[in-house]
Image (cartoon, rainbow, N blue to C red; front, top):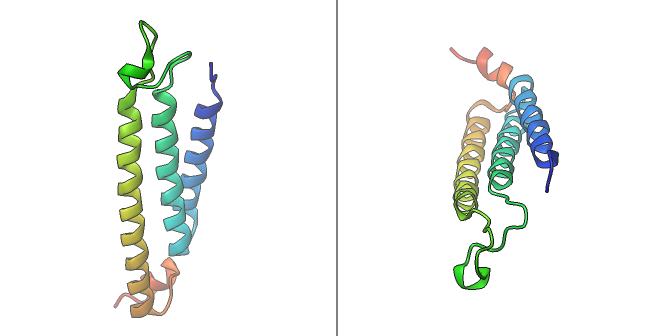
Length: 115
């Protein structure tokens, strides 16, 4: 049994990400916090799919009558990793464009420069 360890880690990562999103003024740090938030969601999905004593979700390797680990959360996690990678790349490219346009990545200075 895995206990509550992964769920505790999910909660800690989620809180770190929320604090980073709402308190940081640097756009790079906000992007990092969003990436941490995605990692906490992925860990949550993997922890939900765990079964005590479960075998691999491939039928011919599982044997007879044993419980199998759920394959759906694993597939969803792989999909979420790919989507998070693309989202992070897009976010960082937008931050680069903001820096080229405004000359800063500080949120307060960008708001002040609105005209």
